[in-house]
Image (tube, rainbow, N blue to C red; front, side):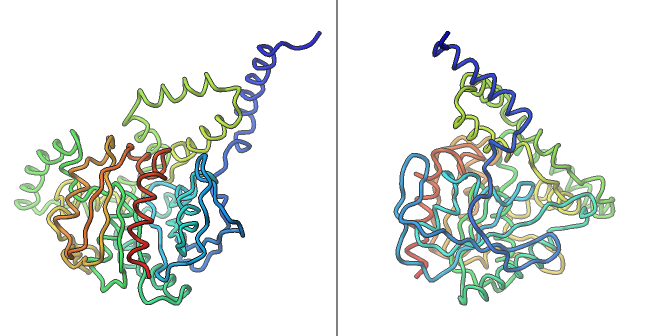
Length: 373
């Protein structure tokens, strides 16, 4: 007896549900663009991407023509901490790396690696004064370029700002995406931090109380806890997303997109204790970046020294980094060529959501193209 369409759909849904549980990697398509490692220091590495010979690159449902011209200034992408570097290449049809290469950019990526408990001593000094200068030097050498452009997402953008404020950085252009310069303006928790910072700073002034003497293992945050915390910023969204999966379990392409994007939040990496301790003291409590100055190791990062051309983004519905928190970068940095954009999306969507190619990516490529030749 022939199977009815309803029966076929039901069998396909059951098959997909079982396969998703037993062989999840069959549905996950992250990190598919070819790259070579050009530099390494411990767990940190720098990648250089190449685009296979092609006339177009698929971005969502559209075909983007590949530019014949390559811009002279190379571009180094800087991820946030706590996530994998491949979020810039999350899936073949939603890859910022591929999009930017198609738009004519020579693309590099700084991979912070996957810190474990044994790396809990990694501090802001490591990122700002050791790894970022080394990565920039590696890109300049490999690309044979005098200057480069930097693009940082979330904490990656803050690390770029601190690096440029503390060093004579050969950076022509800087793009920040959802980077909270003013932590005390980031939504309800920012207001709470602002209130708590007053007695905390008084205790610091009166008794010289510091977090630095405390063991870094007290502050080390496992990736599993980060994943849970990220999901808890929008519990209804998590539930709705799962319900949508159930309704579309018979659609293999839908499952692939769902599980690939979900890998970002399900497979986060540890946040080093040394860095968390400094972020709490210097950014969450003291809100040093909002004041324009912050001490990193033996150097002081003065954000007024950041005079490169600046493009900053905030997500219209970002529950983690508010528009006000991101916009303060315009106030504390030097230079005159500065632009601030509010684009659709939450904290992840503004960077790699379905609307990002038409907004964040397009604006970035257009803006950089005018400043990269």
